[in-house]
Image (cartoon, rainbow, N blue to C red; front, side):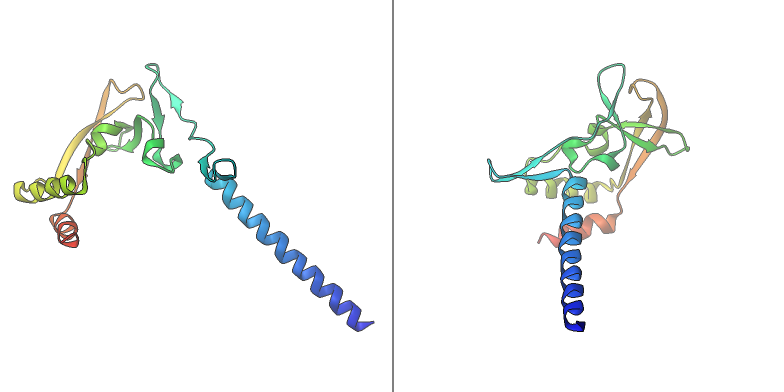
Length: 152
């Protein structure tokens, strides 16, 4: 009798582990927004973040919702230098993307030569028209030099 009880207990424990593992896995898949598409044999993005849209048809909100840079809104929420909440244009925040790693390295090296370790951009209202504050983007010389040397 005790033997049967132990077997039932072990089977229940094993079943609990299997169900728990499946629940954790499915929660990860659902929360990450990914699923496995057997027809195309690759992962597909289920849904982009649902950002608010301003009067000009541009998206605005927090980058926290985005899994990828392409999913980020046109206007990104920030706290300005003077404590005012607002939005910066994505293109102004990141700048133009280098066309290659070599070009990115040249840009970094030029910043070190020029002593260009920060830049200031405007913080706007949700429509991206009224300036509310400024936002300073800073790079330390040590950080830029580290990345340059890490690629050598």
